[in-house]
Image (cartoon, rainbow, N blue to C red; front, side):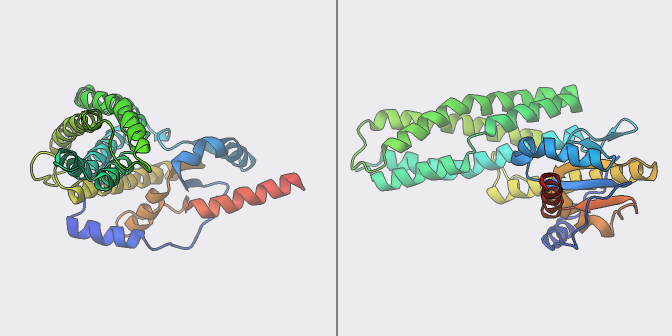
Length: 304
């Protein structure tokens, strides 16, 4: 199961459309409801969401759980590949200010303000929980194929190995707040270089995985450019949304009903893809805001 990958021109048009918010749709009994979420809020909201689904006699699935006739609604290969692209994007984004920090530290007269600013940019570009993405990427890769798991293993290891070095760099960056001089520039340089080593390895591994996939966006040499990594992330995300909608259509045609939680962006991507993949009449696309209003209304009724 899959969708035809749009041309770069068509992709840009679809992404523009995805920014338009369609008329909101409520979660409905007797339908297969695909509902948007912010993944970091899922755990806290899940008990009330499951109770809501039960009230409407609907099954409940997290994003990676929905299957129909042994087909994954959200294919593990695409899930893993998008996380590879995320790691590549973050590493590439962080490498630019990191190189500037190295240059500033190597200067004969160290500009502490420049060093502080560049290291702050490095830390901002590297999510503190990227090791979580690396771990879940490897899990998805294992569900996809042994070859994908083997390809992702070194990237997962590098991303996880980066964690303590990022934490060390964050501590040293905090020590620079209000300081007028760097008391131990050699140690700070070593910390920056340790982070840089893992970033370069991550970039090379991620690039090799992407270039060995069906996504032929040129990364223009080791590490690529930031905007190219951003395009890979968006391209894979759109394909995930297309696969979700195709699988949901097949399931809805077979009278499968339920509540399937997916990333909010995928809801808007599916709405944008409607001209290519028309949602089945029993498929409902509900964004996070609309579903939140329904949950709130249910809580009000329960309390009263």
